[in-house]
Length: 194
Image (cartoon, rainbow, N blue to C red; front, side, top):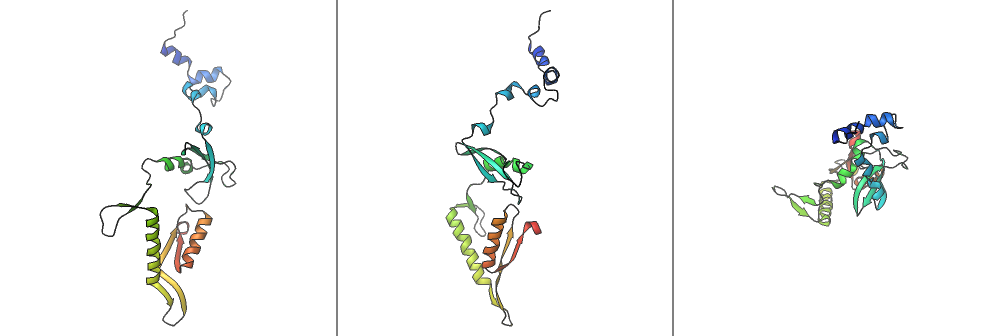
């Protein structure tokens, strides 16, 4: 009997379950379930120019990440097995960090809308930073309470408050707390406590 080499016959003999039963991959976790296209693929980690160790930006756990870069563009992010925090594991959000970095709609400019304005305008980063710093200094000067009505020393402002986020690590939260305390703010909170 002649062997039928039609696409229908070839695809039947190439079914993963037949390759699994006839080969040495009884559990179907290796070559039996690998398609010809998959065999031709090269991992992005293998073709990267360099690997940079980082920390996941999504929560306060601080899972270690390996960021693979090719041509100055992030091509893959994986868990860092050398991290004592996560030992190479990432949650679904951490695993999707590459999409955060390379999202086509990622905002890369500082946008500002003037009071009562209806349109956004682009600002230089230095100009925006100076505006924020100046507004904080003005607010502190305007709302400063040196003493209460009985003459007791206060040295505080109720015009500035801080709300930290759980995406910051301990060191960043520590510095933010020190900065706002030095400015006299007493309303300092973190989302993890709310």
